[in-house]
Length: 228
Image 1 (cartoon, rainbow, N blue to C red):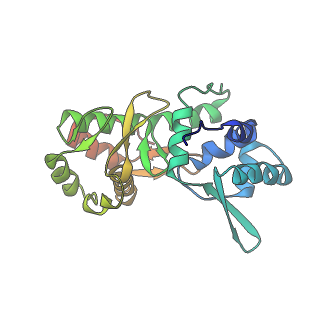
Image 2 (image 1 turned 60 degrees about the vertical axis):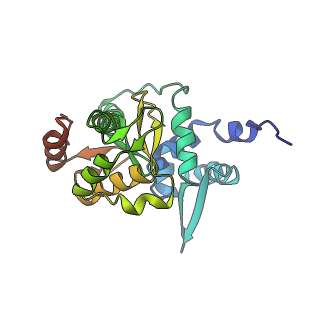
């Protein structure tokens, strides 16, 4: 028998600012030590451990022990997708100060949504590939034959993406329009990292678009993107 979903446990798990900070940092698919998460949230190690335990118990985060250290990551891409969608209706966090403002700008410009490109970079690429006929549709994206050829020429592992749904439109919470997700989105993100067209910022989820990255998107699709 079909039953309604019970969101109360998830609501409790999401109910503190520290846990929100942890989840925001982990949404890029990285595995981070408890100490780093505690520092980012401005809480003690013992408080962070309690909060992280709640997220683990709720099935939002997984924990891995390595010697004396514990590392945390999101429980999967489905969790990242759900959190990205919740970002559309969640209140924005007001930022003050140069450092926090720069961090917010990095997130809006380019970031990973678990394993695929998001922010202005992700949505601009998706829009350009739709215009070029590489992707068909808008709410439900589909890879076309010309798109498969073009992405292979860029070095994207299109054929290796067949182990899960190849394309999926993920609604971007900062741009409020879709970016490419699914196996192909993951393969694109991997290629951009391997080619050093983007680099992970040393703190947080933001990405730097390198000079080589700006060149490739300008020459291929006429896009002007911010760099580091």
